[in-house]
Image (cartoon, rainbow, N blue to C red; front, side, top):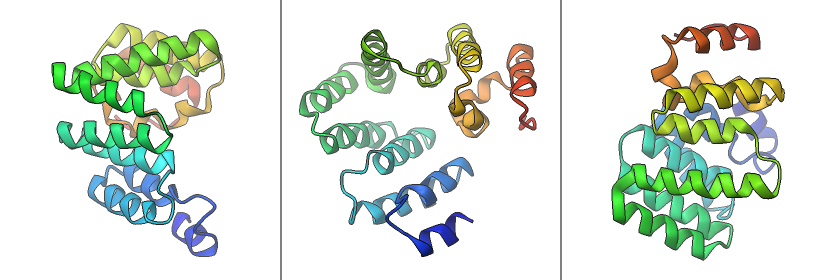
Length: 177
């Protein structure tokens, strides 16, 4: 379906195929498609996002950190790009994710930010309790982002957790564990 939509209107959702490949954990295809589409949409945040997350999920941390910095540059946030690069240089990818988490938590103080976005970062850090609490909060807020948590590799460590399994059932998703 996504291929047909891209054929009909490739500019409506230039990130659509990259997201589909990412959700299928076909990271090379997601990266390739996103990079191709960046030629016509160089500032599309989601294209940069799927590149960064795909590289992270492949364990290519330096490249993922570079992709995050490119994302911040694409949204005209050179200070954030510099801080992300500095965090990575100081402590590796986990330090970059901790910086992203602090930044997101500060953002959440100023305006609404889905708890699932924060849960994603806690999941990347392997923080079980914080991740589950934020996913539960996202469920209470009816966050549509919950529909994709089973495709996120960062949540794989929760698949055997009864609380996570209960949440998946309450959301109404078929289990992917």
